Length: 247
Length: 293
Image 1 (cartoon, rainbow over the protein chains, first blue to last red):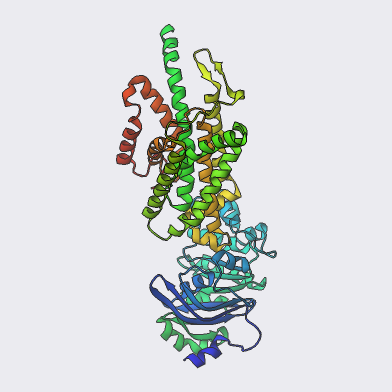
Image 2 (spheres, rainbow over the protein chains, first blue to last red):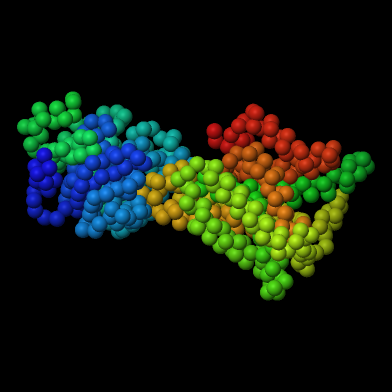
């Protein structure tokens, strides 16, 4: 598997990746969660991490962001090694993170939540553009952040990281627990973000949703990336994926 | 009518005294609330830092000839800087451990600081004069209000409202509130949260020192002046609810006032009433009057 992995990790074998993760291991306290994750994401791609619960998908995002305990391996973003950086410096390098639990702040209004992440580079969406994407956020500007519905909170969690000028977005299960119509709206949003040149690494359990937005899929098992499937090969790889995901 | 005027003449000075105490309770518990909200540390050094504010004011005057007005600005900055040093070198190492360690460390710091001052300045207390501009008093008709006491209450109200405004209504305040809820996520947005914690501790300590300067002309400048205040202030914090900004301000003034009223009705009970209220609040609303459970 390791040899096959190298090819899978750098699928096109050409061009430099925007994000290069090599042999990433991570711990939460004493427990060893990631056992050597390797993956590549090129500029402008939407890539998903698929896998069962506990496979290490969320931890991979958190480790890229510097939010786990000890980490080893290499994480190069736009050619720069970030494994030793603090989370705030990783964010300032141009990576934005939207956590699974959405992380809406109860003591902040919707507007304050939206304006919270500091601008790190030019080129982010304007507040008007975010309001065009998610009109509900404008209507509820003055409400307490956590008074929003689940779908609105997800929109707020995504919306607020679009402002900052970050070029790589890490989204952790944006479709989780949402009504189908809202999942659809989030899918539309992700495709629009791709058109605007954002690069997205998406953790998903919802395989159907993932295939509507992604260019490639990495499959994780036991804290490792075990396979990579391009979206156009998906139909041909169904049996393999079903086995991995147990769906 | 006549008896009402007599009553007012009796009552008013005590109520004002209560209000002045309340002003200090509010300022001190506000600083504690700000620090606890952000650092999750119960700052037992707070009383010592209040005392340091008064001492630095005294030192500035005796050693450098800098008077009250200069001290009102300089002493909080100096003591705040000492606080930053304490946070950087010691408290910041304890965030990953149980809260109790922070409590023990800051309690130890308080003992060391108070010991050092007792060693160098004795226990008898040093005089600090009311600044010339604030001497005398105002005749309100039913009572004579010493100008300086009025000034203390006014400054405390202004400072409390200013702090509340910064935390609740500004961008910096939104970082603070957010980091109180989820420090990791705020840091993952690109905010240097460790530095923010250091500065928050410094600001909370500066508030205590500011109260110390205000207190210097009223109480004599003594190494134990903070220790006697801080016990009541912790009761205030428990009553108001840990970490609530407006809660500590309102509770501080309210309890000072209640103490004043008790002094009027049954003086022996005045020092105890706060703890009596604390017990009732703990039994009925453990999160405090303004606390979020």
